[in-house]
Length: 143
View (cartoon, helix red, strand yellow):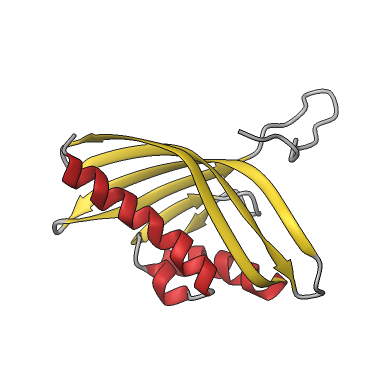
């Protein structure tokens, strides 16, 4: 794994942070492949294609007045024209009703491909652990 490749991938994932903070769907389009498959925390089980992914992000902008997003402990593995990474992510901010929320930490996995010389996210998965006895997500955990 070269430092340049790792920096390029980190920059792509950084576009997600930039786009969310700016509430800008055009910036959010940049890091993803047109045929991205996303297993997000919101139904349905999968979101296929960039328009479905952006529609999910647009829902965030409908609920939040200001948005912050942070990623912790991003670890990458790169081999040839494919790479994967995992991290913790947290969406927070101020809701449209004025209430500030610290958000919750989620687990994020990225699958990337180098296409025409650029790294793009072709798959992502976001999840929260759940309590087996209650069947409820555990949203109060921190990395």
